[in-house]
Length: 432
Image (cartoon, rainbow, N blue to C red; front, top):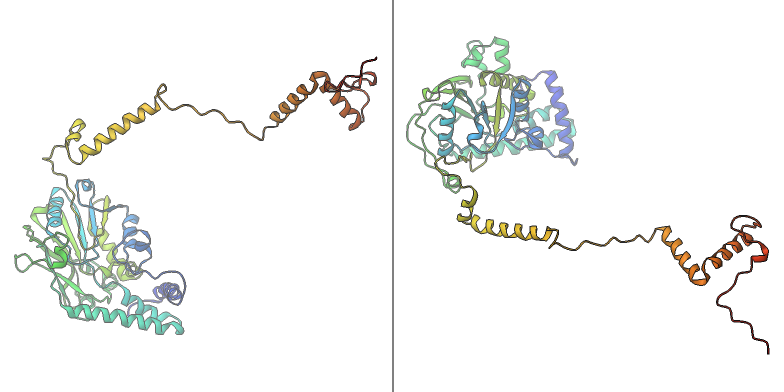
């Protein structure tokens, strides 16, 4: 792969070797999950966006996960949307973003999903891997390139929501390496030649971002209709500004503005592989991420990361005209009415059970079988039944004499009195 210096090659060599071990039998999994920005998929996958998220954090931004579009995003200054499925700009989410962008100065960054970084990764890894692994990397690279070629042959139309249009570029299109001296794109024009070379690089480009040609809505495909979503055309008129272009001048990163949005803007990154974890190990990816954070604009605030799949971004706004039921009104709403009644009855029964008068009887305290004091008490009772205190004293005195060998002491009875009286002995025969 051209344009990668020795330092980057050494970095990628370590990644390649670790991944190569996983491919030949190590338990470590080679992850290619696309779209996530946190967790194992976001940090360990070559197609994750964990590095982009940390770039925002290192620039002073606070980050959060966004799962649904609702009024809780009022304090969010920017949203980075990384869909895993390309055709999910549905009408409902488009209307929500039109309103969200028009309320105050905000930024939406929409990253179009593409084929990912697998092909670039296997190409670089094949060049720096040991000889015994080169064939395996070449096999993996051929498989990925074949999948990309079959996807291009399908020639699917890409629906639009009215903001912009996504179109495929010819095979072999790369970043604008031809425009280093006279760059096309606002980012490349504002940078010195050396920085522009780092920014554009030679990354393969799959999509370009173009303005809408017609104002007609694109019909949804059956695979998207199954989620109850429809495509529609936004009534907002957008102005496009190219930030980075391909070598044929096609815009691949574009800024969208509109009078309806005020100072807000939408930044469309036409190829998600430009900002994936693997890309951010290269000077080109790092330069694009730096420019993207700066383009987000304003003082660092709160940026949300939204990842969606086939159903798209879900809008869950509460209708303000609907009165929220409180108190006893819950008893009139089905099925809450049935649930609340049973909960009330269960709570009443629980209170009666725990009431001190009608409650359950207390458990008696159980004695321990290992208490030695109980053993002493039992022996004392047996001695008492055998002859009383005097008998017990004689038995203790006999123990002290025979076992301990003592002849005097507080527990030793003198010899004249040492013979105990057996209460159970038979009386002597009477004299005739």
